[in-house]
Image (cartoon, rainbow, N blue to C red; front, side):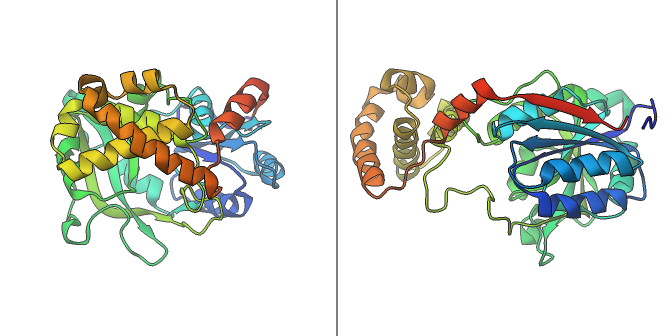
Length: 330
């Protein structure tokens, strides 16, 4: 079914792993959008539920552009996101979790805000940052005492002081495309990717709620009872914890960061010499290498308690064996 050759304003990206039940709710929220000036790029990360048949049924029925990428094996969020980015045609990009839903006027409200970005300053802007809430109407974006009363043009560095977590962020696609998430494990924190892109740039920030987030899925990302994604965590710490950031911490926090880093490195099978080189504060001060002994003891305890799942091993195997397919209704 050929829909339109017009470039959509927004590309909504959704990677998903065994979330068919939630994807149906998200799809319903997209169908209900008052503005259809978007495309949906959905990635099936090796799901073993009925995700594949559900998305293929949507390709036949729905009259908005859907691009469907499927991996034969789970390859993780970073790897599937990198593939999905290759199919973006929108001027702006936003990620929408498979367990989230957009309010009916979300695309319309975001589109109106985009028109307020000064054209002569467009290079100085990332895009839009809008509020998300949970199913209990609690803000997932702002601290309770910092919820804005009206839209404002704010720099990322200021925003990091007033937002607590998940926001609906809509970025200019030219800022994102060409960059890659680091592929070392099924999961690596996105902070290490976006902080670099957002540095020194502005957003139009709005208190308008555009998304409801549901965190009841069985496979919500969490360390929980098992230590998973240790290699991804070690790489993330190495990227984020520069000497400048590290110098701001109390001695207690510094010790915690280093202990966790060594712990994740050991569980992630990263060689000592490589791990030492990767983390700037450790590479510059050999004394922090002594903390390795404490982390090693903790790792021995983790293994004895059966807490460790070496996800990076399966990740590497799946990356070699995966088969990627693509379908679209456009």
